[in-house]
Structures are given as C-alpha cells and as structure tokens.
Image (tube, rainbow, N blue to C red; front, side, top):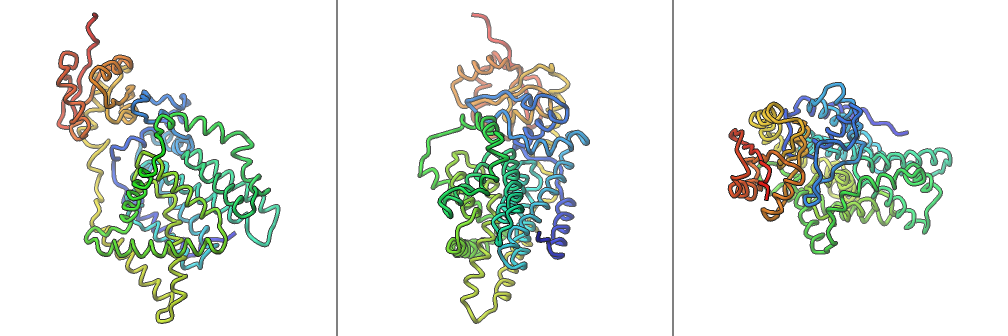
Length: 481
C-alpha cells in the first residue's frame, strides 16, 4: 500500500493545527446541523432516532430524518461533551485531515508525487474549506467515504491481478460506498458509477463488481436505506426541466469560480478560473482517451444529479468533486506542458501554484476569525432560548423559521410555516396545536409574510416576549363557532 510522503504528512499536520487553532465560536442559522446533532443526541441517549421534536410539514418539505452515519460519528462527542459545537468541529477537522490523506493516496497512484501533494494542498489550504470547517454538516464525512471508495475500487483493478487482494479491496470499496450512502443519500451515485464503468469497459458487470455490491445490495442494506432516506425527499420532487438543470449548472459554475476569490480584485480570480477550466477539459479528455474509469463516471453522474436537483445548495454540493476537478486540471496542465519546450514543466507548475497560493493568502487576509456574528450564540438568540425553556410548558409547540434548531436548543416541539392563505396557515397551526409563534427580525421571509399575518390576527396572537431580534406571540385557541 502506498504511504504518504513526509511532505504530505507535514502538510496535513500543519493544516490541522491551523484549522483547530482558528475555530470560530458559534454556528450560523442553517439548521441542518441541528438535525444531525438531534439524531446524535438520540443515539447517545438511547432515544428513538427520529424523535427530534421537529414536526414534519409536507408543505415545507424539510426531511424529518437524515441518514444515520454522520449522527453515529457525532454521538460519542455528544455523550462525552454534550452540545459542544467546538468539540464537534474538531472531530470534523480530524475527518477532513483523513480525507486529505486518502485524496493524496488516490491521486498518488495516477500522477507524479509532486502533483498529488499539490492537489492535496490545494484542497487543504483552500480558504473555502477553512470557512467550511465551522459547519457541522455531513459533507466532510461524505468526502472521506467517497475517496475511500475510489481508493479501494481503483486498487482492486490494478495490474498485475491478485485475485484475493482484489476481492478484499472490492468488498472494502463496497463497504465504503455503503457508508457514503448512509452519510448522504446521493452516495448511491458511487454504486451506479462502478456498475456503469464496468458496462462501458467490459459490456457486463464483472465478478469484482459483484463483490463490491455485496455489502450494500446483496445484504439488503441499500434498499432499506433508500426506503428510509428517500421517502421524505420525494416530497421535494419536481418534474425534470432541462432549462432548470442548465440554469443550475450556470449557478454552480459561478460558485466554483469563488474557489479562486482573493478578496480584492476579480481579475486574478477570473484568470485562475478560466485557466483551471481549460486544463480541466484537456485533462478529462486525456483520461477518457486512456480508458474510462469509475472516477470519470462518478464525476459525470454526480454533476448530473446535483444539476437536476431542484433545490440549489451552493458550492457545498461541489465538495465531493473538487479534488477530482483539481486532479483533471493537473492532468491537463501536464499534458499541455509536455507539448511545450521553452519552459520546463516544473517551472510552469511552480508559477501556477504561486499564483493560486498567492490568491489564497490574499483571501485569508480578508476573512473574519472572530465569533460567528449571527446564529445560535448571538446574545438575543440565547435569551430567546432561555425564555422558551423557562416560561413555556415542555409540551409546547412553536412556530419558528428554524424549527429543527429551536427543537434542539429548547426541547420544545417545533415546525415551520409555508406560503399559503391566512386560513390555511391558521388551520395548520391549529392542527399541530401550536401555542407560540416566533417572529425573527433578521429573517426576510418573517418580515414579508409572517409579520403581516401576525398584524392581521391580533385577536389570536398576543405578544409575550420581545428582544431586539425576536418577538414571541402566544397563539390562543380559536373561538368556538
């Protein structure tokens, strides 16, 4: 088995020290993280997995449960440290460092060691990944399991063949793919990629692919996971529209451009973006001409899925393919450099890295290293949570724009609202037996929709608490007719 070089190990250690010593206190308002922590809390305490206090509303289809692998990873942290966001961030940084090591090993098999170290460094030192470290989300564990899958599946197909080791590696690849699926449901693309790559190369699935499928399909775990994970996602489905997919592709491309943002001027960002994209196209074509592999199929299938998915999620959806993007760009650069004679490859590559890492360094000078200003640790947010825990009954149901987060931090059952007529909203609030409606000053939708609704129904909504960021209204039952 290939081992990381001393330079790669030193880089991983330095990246880890930098990320851990610059963790920012708090968390932003995105409440996906609170659902993962609620599941972890239930696992640690032996409570039903999906009993998070979030009341699912099909009109606002935020899934009532997420795949279990990331909560399983968080559960020991919750058990030992409680709701300690910093401890959870440190665990995610450790998983990110493991991902960097596997990314190095994956590409060390395919390109020169210096290129593999460069790819790892471009990922690990990226300001985007530095900023992302303060998000307690499943994307980094998914990144790790994705590249573990690619590592084992590529090693299983090495020449000269060693049947026993190949079978073991195929099984391990299948197990890692299953863990990826249990982390994010889109991990099924990994399984599809292995099967499709076999069909393209051999016109049929091979025996090694059968071994790969053992952990996820033959054992029945994949169908069970799909049934569990996809049921609520189906509520979010919309008919496929090619224009929408193309528009999504444009949006995601703009997000990818921001990987190279320096925080000052747009010229260098555009130059790096266009250059890397040009190298990418050359590199991807070069790889295709040498024989399509699982990596190429995965890249295409994964991008097709996120472009077709109707709910835009920003650059975080690109995380699994960013290392592959850099890999293909490096392959393309090497291919083009091999055609030139005036400048050596080493000199040209060094110049490219100086430009990129210079952009990274400039970007780091513009970032905020202090506590996250908005979100769960803002004083007014803490005061709201304290009021609800202290002054409302444990069985109370609340309406809040981040329902899952409120349920985690207050222990009160919570749900969101949706765009509808006043009558429909009141009927929904009464159906879930809501007792409190919370209005957030900073949330645009609360100000545009919920505030006018409250002002039209002062007969049923009585203000009982207020601070600069939030107002809590008690919802009285409807008068008997």
